[in-house]
Image (cartoon, rainbow, N blue to C red; front, top):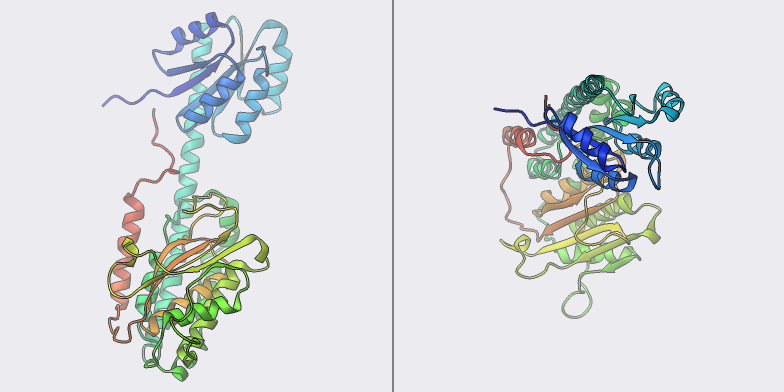
Length: 412
């Protein structure tokens, strides 16, 4: 099978030089050309994942080539940058190269053999950079997967130890796992990850701390009991009455004053308020909190019982929520401790009383879930081995599913 050609972007305002470069390079590389810096930047944004080398003439109408190369360095650091200059501009190109802003410079008119040698070395540098990043990503993926596995092991031990007082704990942890919507190895900030996971021992101690922070939950649930009737509408109304920034909310009870909440409902209200507080924090004026009834007939509301919608996000965020690389979706370790603890306590409490949760969006600043009406007859209990099977299946899905941010395979 013939390998795809590496892409080279050449920017020059003179038609003759673009044609010459195309003639000299097109046999080995796929060459795309632009007539000025603006057009070059547009092509660079469009083909950045495939371009290995960017070569720009210095003297062009509008922005000079060196400005385009500096901008490319800031946004696409892996792409190798070369400047083409006339004889009178040699000092500029040498100075920029010595400062590390550029990989190399070529003079016009160029020697074809020399140009081929420079471009070949530049492509080799690009491939090495990409392989280095790929190896680093694999190492980080291993660290994060071990961290997540350790965390789930700690939660499983907690669930098994308190099986007599917390019902359907494994179902709650299964929902925790379903909320993980991206591969833990796909990260954009390597330094942050290394600071968070300096050693496996620290990770293990931190994960044990999450389970230990739940120590009072079994006693609370045992004191309330599991046979208390729970009305999801009253739970949501209780949270709504305590939050003054709710924009949309469930309707009140159909007739008369709402009934007094049971002990189980009051405990769930407290858990829900804890969850909301962790995602709203001090940014009440910037957050939209929506507690609403489901749209009848939507796929999420199919099945037994009603499904209620809870959403927390910034006021400026549209609906549906967009992907935001600055706020990556939950990957098992990127929530801070208070958010994650509130999330786990909420899940355990909901499932204990017969409810269930479907995660729509979960990240540091945004939360969107669907909560199904409580079923007092719910007795299905996932086993630890079943959850382990879910975990294996999830990891296999991550490994084989296409990922838009995954580095492309080597072209040469």
